[in-house]
Length: 291
Image 1: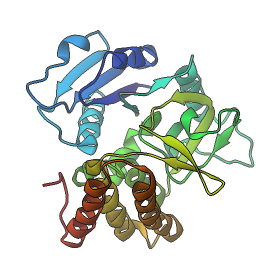
Image 2: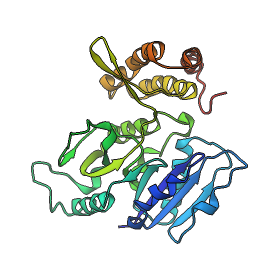
Image 3: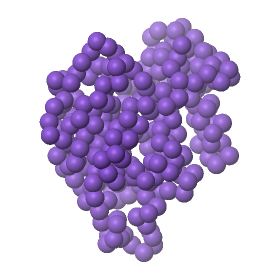
Image 4: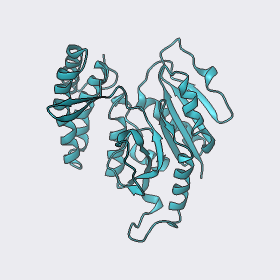
């Protein structure tokens, strides 16, 4: 079983190399795909027998960068691809455990007959992202989520080819969720392996007490607000017939997040304008990088 990896860079700091060190030993090859704007050249920081540095000579979006890594992995006859964000790292030997679990799935040695998992139907195996849980919560075993975020996933490259890869025109945001919905639509399984733990930075989340309730605020930039809004609507158009509940919930989140911006966040006006522009560009059918 040959497992490659891809990590997408954007103006990386010195911690990225430490993050890479948490998983490089368990991979056959790692493709470091750099979206940093020129004239930045980070190649000198990412050298090694298992590392291939690829510059996109500017920000082509996370979907494009992931596709670059996937195509390189396919070219080198890899069967699986680990996808990572630059600010994510595996805890202890989590990736090794995850790969061991994946190998055992092939023969069903550890699976009960009730689960009836089949190797051919496994599209994505995901590590548990610790920052998504309460501090004292510990999950065991496996779960079957509808969607998972990019970082900490091992993707079946045969499945990747079957579903057509990541959609470049989404650029950023909803890239991972769209891929997962596409995988599920094609009748492949997504398994979250909770014994593998991923340390993942979700951004500048702040916690507030509002009317006796705890409110979490993401503080995304105005640019991110544009893509989140626009791509949620495209996601709805693509998958509402198959996953109506999920797509409807995603759309409803924009109004709730708008309220949080007004109540708690800085740079309110620019973020509100970005949300409006995202919706307007969706109605116009505009895709790709924001203009």
